[in-house]
Image 1 (tube, one colour):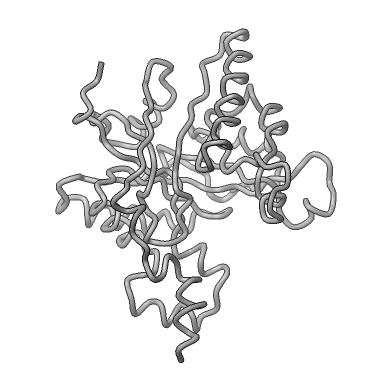
Image 2 (cartoon, rainbow, N blue to C red):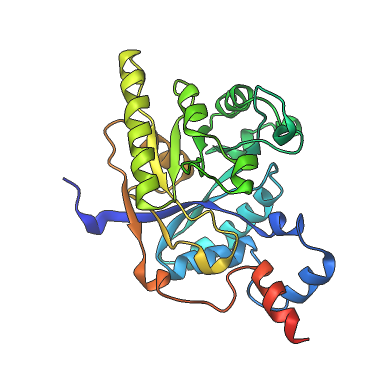
Length: 283
């Protein structure tokens, strides 16, 4: 039985300024750059370090533009930090459904790929809008792991979910290919996801495949929520390859945490978009 004091925190779904730049015009970015709200890799490391989070999964919507900045920030910040935080770099890939309909013309369900060896990833052929199976093949070819994020668990999902998330039925169809499932929903939704993982792992056991893992993360698009919740893993993990090896280990116990100190805070702005909506109104 592991001692709790030997556990470290990890939030594996955090976005950067590069995703916000795809949504906001230059005027907004110029204004927000004056503050500490912009999601640079260094700011994310500082924020996560203050919140006791050692590992941050840094992803981009269909791109890896943040990778170079993240590696440079980690090299600069890590020696001066007691926690020695590090990034697990990844991409949130847009895929396409097999049945092409109006929902698939613009984007499709998202699929997280985490790459413990980023320098070996072929970024020239980064897939976009391929099938989930083709996307997962690319992730595995580049020594990565494939995780299904924010699955649809509601009978009446929000419009945005229809574009960017897999249904439970679609997730079940990928049972033999995926490596993990992300949970960041309500307790009732997470129970549905627990049932899904159990069903998938029963099928994988019959085929002598290792079980998939479950994680909880924030899907942060603003500094205020980085590290608010996540997973607890062994304190012996010091690098992305060690983390991925741990997640894939059937014997590893992955615990979840929620930080009440952060969750109880009510920041005035939680993202650049909130800043735009609130701050600009006073001009």
